[in-house]
Image 1 (tube, rainbow, N blue to C red):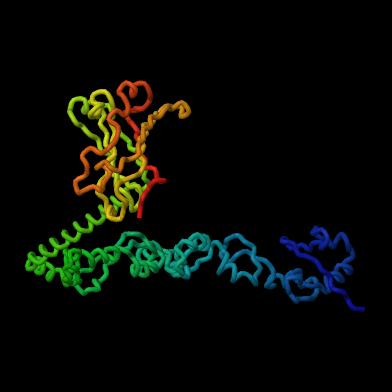
Image 2 (image 1 turned 30 degrees about the vertical axis):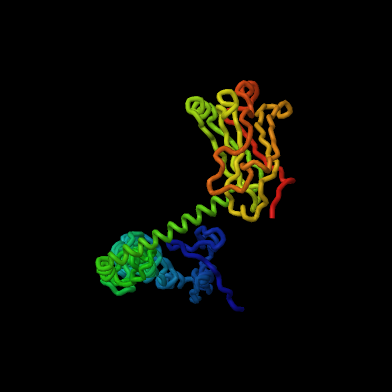
Length: 427
């Protein structure tokens, strides 16, 4: 009959222990019979490190001797660090994990004990590490600060033209567009203005650029360099004076033409004039102090190609109304189209002095009108010198009446002069 192997353990005191509860096995008590003990010790067993890979198998009495050489059995560290290490792992322990081992740093080459080497690792100045600016470079830890300050492509450096800070790998591209970077003058002068000052340089300072004469608006057509312009200005003073004089004459004619155009635009062609007399009190006082003070209205026309008229006003009266009434008159002025009009003037003319009452329904305007007498010389075609007085009403309104109503309000009076369009005799 074959003998099955038995698994037992050997304690540190050299006693066999039970594989169930690790208690020492006293075979003398279990098997008092020497023959039985002999049979047990002759039984075939596996090494207690069978699960770790030991393939030894023999009689139980030889197990202890085998454990003295078994590579899987734990023994004290040869460097006396106090650890129990399997013989098969002793070399790795002594080389890599033993606190009392001696090893050289792979970066700086210095020798350290195991615990000191662990502290040294991660702090060695010779160990290559990646740049903290993420430029991709690896440098020795002791040179990282120098690299960041002097060599890193991601370090911030100021543009030497504008002073703004850019990374080292982009500052060159910025320089190609920097507004303060000097650029050569396209006119090939010796200056190198800043990019944003190039236009001003070309316009105002470049000695090689072409410039126009300062009298170009007067008609001078010179164009050349600034040096040539200076000579031209000195040598052409008489020519420039003549050009400026001719320009002034042209501008004067243009100005007069514009004034005439504006005057024509402001002329009244409706046949009705509302005349605003301001500063009434001052003008009345002047009329009372001086004889013959006459106020004249702006000229107006009965139509675009009609008669030209003008009203006049004597605040202190004239003729029969002097010193007691306000007198109003209408006079015919020489017009541009008199040769095409019917003479004598035969349109009905009315004068209206407005009552400026706050309630329009209670206003009481003063109205006077007349139909021209064709025999009167006042209504014949006027000569170049119109009638001095015209035709109207010497006693249009009394001074007493002016005080009773609101004909004068806020020191302003309004007088309307209207020509009846139903009786216009035109071409």
